[in-house]
Image 1 (cartoon, helix red, strand yellow):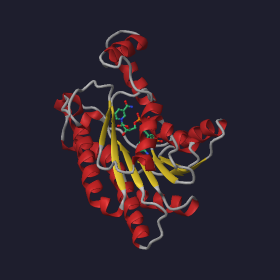
Image 2 (cartoon, protein in one colour):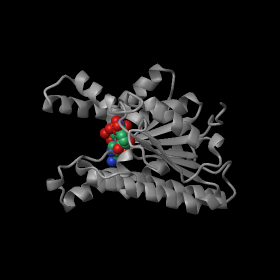
Image 3 (cartoon, rainbow, N blue to C red):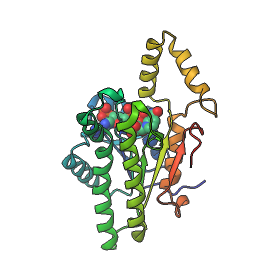
Length: 268
Ligand SMILES: NC(=O)c1ccc[n+]([C@@H]2O[C@H](COP(=O)([O-])OP(=O)(O)OC[C@H]3O[C@@H](n4cnc5c(N)ncnc54)[C@H](OP(=O)(O)O)[C@@H]3O)[C@@H](O)[C@H]2O)c1
């Protein structure tokens, strides 16, 4: 399928690891000009090396996106160095899980700073600039945004109340902003992964294995047995759907929330 992504300028937040890195690789393979942002220079350098060894070249920017001015600086820097952003993939962040009895107001605030705002700040800055370019007649094609959110925003779990609430808020913002920006042709969609085999998940499996005195392989097998498809997702599978949603092949898809949990949670 020809996706028409060659020459697009793509910013992937959280592009140094996990799902974000898989997205950066997938867009670069399509010929897009890819910039990634994350906080740790070592993660950024490692991502660049990995992709360079595959013949793929990306632009790196270091920032902590829970600060509104950092997000604005990143968008400015990428626009200057690479070009006006056509596609934003938001994948920077992760919410800690809390025992419900230790879930105080500070934990809720920390969770919003870890997951909600690192998506909202770059999205607002990118949208502002996309609208400006469209109004000025300078955009080649309206832009697209894909937010990698998480199934934990669709149902309440005792240990993921704050993170689930952040995810639910991101879904509402996705649909609301998609509704408004449709007048400009800008499309905004989201993917809700379930458990996906990134380093973060491997670390969680290791902890679970130690807690339950089983091997990491046993913890993985138990988790995968709970998924109707019989296994966890690979980051590349999430990236493939992000590619499609961001491409002109999804030109009439906006405000959609795509579940990708192997139908573990059979809800509509
Ligand atoms: N993996 C799963 O099973 C799963 C399931 C459901 C939802 N999700 C969601 O999908 C997204 C990606 O998950 P993942 O598993 O790929 O996570 P990951 O492997 O931990 O990668 C997260 C990326 O975001 C960057 N990052 C985190 N906070 C940041 C901040 N404040 N500013 C800038 N960069 C930041 C990290 O790099 P630095 O540390 O260098 O900043 C890293 O590149 C997350 O929002 C996660 O909640 C994942």
